[in-house]
Every structure is written in structure tokens, then in C-alpha cells.
Amino acid sequence: MSTLALDASGDIARAWAVLHEVPDPEVPAISLCDLGIVRDVRRGEDGVLEVVLTPTYSGCPATEQIEQDARAALVAAGLGPVRLSLQRAPAWTTDWISEDGRRKLRDYGIAPPGPVAPGADVPIRLVRRTVAAAIACPRCGSAQTERLSAFGSTACKALYRCLGCREPFEHFKPI
Image 1: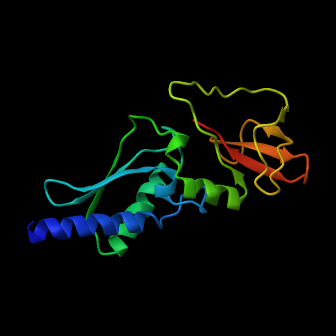
Image 2: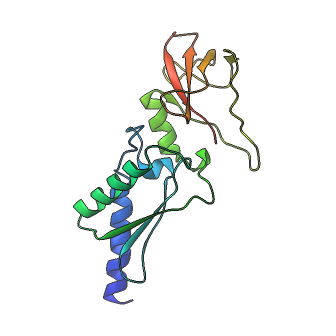
Image 3: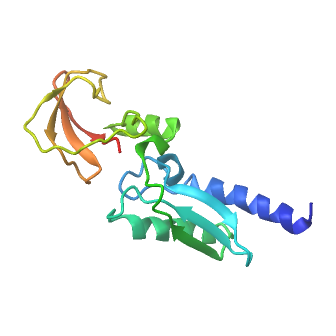
């Protein structure tokens, strides 16, 4: 293996390590990698480090900030220049959130999403408050929760309240 190839694979590993430390701008308790936004890190034919990102949804207002933060972290680590690209297909899914990311969401006070069955549609419904047995409170673990709003601080989260500890919390919607 050539020295250039060794350096490239070392740089790619370093880039992944750096990106594992870049927090999501909307949920800073979880990294871009744990969230599953970073899809690939590779060397382009021109030798430039390429990072492929898949936004959580096409209208995500944090997409530009994610690109800026990833670029800044990689350049600060001496891995620049870097080229970032957005890959929207296949579409991001909450199944891409790592197990460590799910734990970090729970520790941060956000109920992580459950798995999405392949091909299953997860519609967003605007309905009245309902008791939700399936969404456990990230604070006390009670399954006695109710949805207060279909949308939380961002479109990808819903607002819930625990009927046990009475604390509000957000639930990251499965997509």
C-alpha cells in the first residue's frame, strides 16, 4: 500500500472521529454521526476530503449550520480542504440513529424514536391529546404519557407530558 493510501485512510478515520464530536445544532447532546446524518467520508479523485450528509428532512432549517459546523471542525483539525455534499436519497430515517445516540437523547430528556418497519408509513396526524402507552418518559420511565402537540421545538419532534412525574418532554418522531 502506498504512503498516500495510508495517509488517506488515516485522514478518513480522523475525519470520522472529528465528526463524531460535532453536535447537532438543534439537539446538541447528540453528534451528527450518532444522528446518522453523516453518510460517508472519502477522498475524491482530486484528493479533497469529501463528506456526504443526509439531512433529516429536505426542509430542515439546520442543514446549512450542519454543513458549516462539519466543515469548520474538519478544517480546525487540519483535514481541509473539505467538500461537503447533500445526499437526499435514500431519505434519512430515524433508524439511522445509533444506539449510543438513542441513549444520549434519553439522557438529554428527549424520548428516542422506536424502529420503523421497512415500507411502513408513519403519518403525522393533527389530533387531540391522547394517552400514549408506547412513549416512555425519558425522566422517570413511566409509560403513562400524553401528547400535547404534534410538533415540539422542531418539526421532527412532538411535545408530550408524563402523567406520572408531570414533566413535559419531547419525543423524536420516527421517520
